[in-house]
Image (cartoon, rainbow, N blue to C red; front, side, top):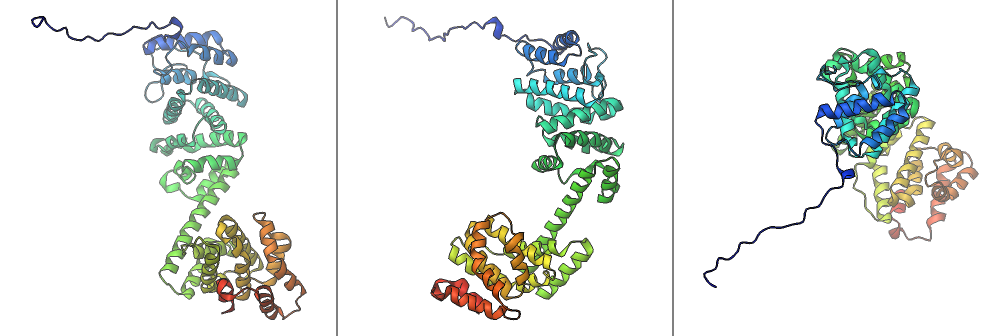
Length: 440
């Protein structure tokens, strides 16, 4: 027994047979192309039939491996060589996007073909985006008509959510920009996109992927100005895009201005200097006083790390705003500016839940230090308030507004003090720090 050799263990398993219907035909690119081209030639211009053919063929043909070949054929009729030319030695079809009529109806029909294909085979999504990026880089190799069709299709697909706006990065290619192909293509693309969705939807898609601030890159460096951008797209009947670019430019300028104001405040620069800087920016950048008071308010409120307790955050807010009231007063010389500030206060208190109960005291402080007038408060109360927290804030201001309406001319300061005393006499000062701050 001991002399017998011990048998080594062996791996054994069971072989499973794959059903014929589950096997995908493994073709090389040429065979794959021939199968797709043959199917497209049979379906012809019937795009419903094309969609059905592609749906059915995905069960047999390896779309995952040959996604680029598939999309090349559907767009250009055959496999594309680097630069955008069709490969000479490959089978082609005359039934593709580039040979289709150049009209919106046909482009929408083609968009549906791609939409159905990608929804059916989700793994093609990434490959399709890469294909579009590649095609955009090949624009120089296509005819004007082919570029127009591709632009229209891309705009529709962007509107339908089949593509991310990140594909636009290909249009910033130096050669395309230098030759003027990028802005020309963008005109067709955005017209198609905006016709399907409004400019607000387009803007949201651009912001989502950080493209909202890069549209100037469609032009050479020496032409990247708002004036040139505006003229180009306005002349192309895309004023919506020009206005969007102007708003983006203004938003960028406001962010920089707010950053600078916050730095000056945190560094202890005198109010006199800050006010002079703000007034100069209004002249230089054509910023309205209403826009400036919004920036000043945000800057002042961004300087503090707010307490999470309502009673303490009210005290903080009163102290902060009282200290910076000269800044607020300097940029509320107009009635509309006062109203704008009240709306900003309302918006802020609503968006920051710990400030909900502080709204009334903030407004009363602004009135006491003569930042806002009774006229502005009454206008806000009667018709100019926001919908945000409307019932809560109107209720908070109800008693004070009644006092304002009943006060005789010249009695507002007396009435204000009397209002405070009658409203809060029953509340001890130490339990209401905000009240004590106002009476100092």
